[in-house]
Length: 168
Image (cartoon, rainbow, N blue to C red; front, top):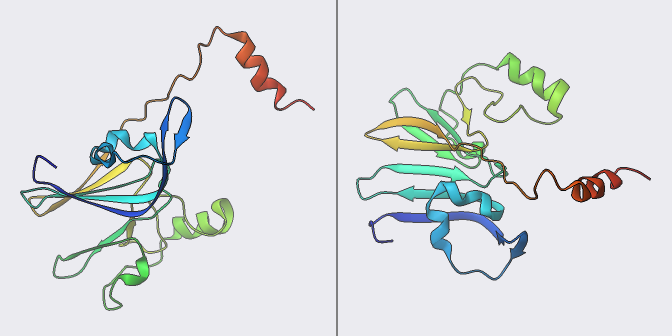
C-alpha cells in the first residue's frame, strides 16, 4: 500500500458483505488493511500487518474463527502462531490453568473460552482484539463493537416477521 506496509492474509475470505448480501467476487483487498472494516467480510482468516517501522499488528475475522496464540520464552522471545503445536517443545507454557480447565469441562465443551488456554503462560487472542508489537513491546487493543442497525425499530412489521420465525 501507499504507506509501505506489508499485509498477509492467512485463511479464506468467502466474500464481502454489502447491502445485506455477500459478494464472493470482490477484488478490493485494501479494505482489509484496517481492522475496523473486518465486520464487512465473511470468512475464517487472520491478517498480519507489518509497518515500515517493523511494528506488527495481527487481527482475525469478526468472530475470531482462527486462533492466534502467543507466549514468551525465558530469553524474552515471543512465539506467535495460529497453531499452538508450532511452539517449540522446550518453551515453558506454565502450569495448567484451573479456570480454563473448568471452562473446558463444564461450559464450552472442548476448549476454554476465548482468550484462555489450558496453560497459564500461553495466551489466545480474543474476539475483536488486535495483537500489536510496537517498540519491542507486546500490546493488546480492542476494536469497539458497533452494532449495525438493520431496520428501524419502529417498524413493527419487521419485528412481527422475526417473531414468526419462532412460532410454529
